[in-house]
Image (tube, rainbow, N blue to C red; front, side, top):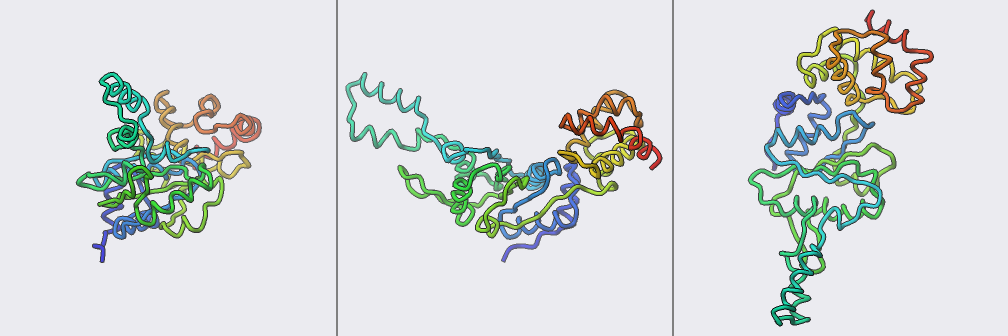
Length: 298
């Protein structure tokens, strides 16, 4: 039976890394450590899913191994590939020395010295004293075939390389998968994971996050900016801003020397918090002055 992990202690340790996890997220992360089970974090872009994995690596002392998923990702990019340049050089060396034996050479060409480990194999074969944190980021961007490929890895933490054989993890890495939910993941993958949805924080928590991530931010600016962003999320936008955009925006305002919101400065810096032209124009045309006034009054 796994040793219990203190949720309160983990929450405090994450806070020391400037990551403020709510009770639900801290509980799931604590269980993933205690049970050595992958955790799947879903939520809108910019709510802190990737940052949670980074903070977990800092807290546990393990290195972060990141696999960024994208459409069309395959085994060669995620698990391993062969170093074709070294293989070719090896063949030419044997030819020059008249030691080329086609049968033996073919066997040697697919030995471990020519194997290039990608993030998944790196995590499985690690020899670190502290298990690394394997971040499989934005798994929803990958296709069904790649998701199916992950099932063997997440079930038994082993993979099969035809030329070498089955490779098993001597010590399981911590695994965090993230998804922006651009498509539904298969139930088979979800069953192998603990699950948590990360939503947008309430205004009070967002202010606390800003204080932690932007040291020295003027208190009035933090409160007003968080209130303004919370109001933006109530509008019919193509893409509502996440916490990441709030932090970026406040850092921009601090860099400009602002200590509170002003309609003119907000107008000129909207591109730091909104990333669609139509959203920026919507706010400018009918909401900007009202939202700024409400944020200042609140």
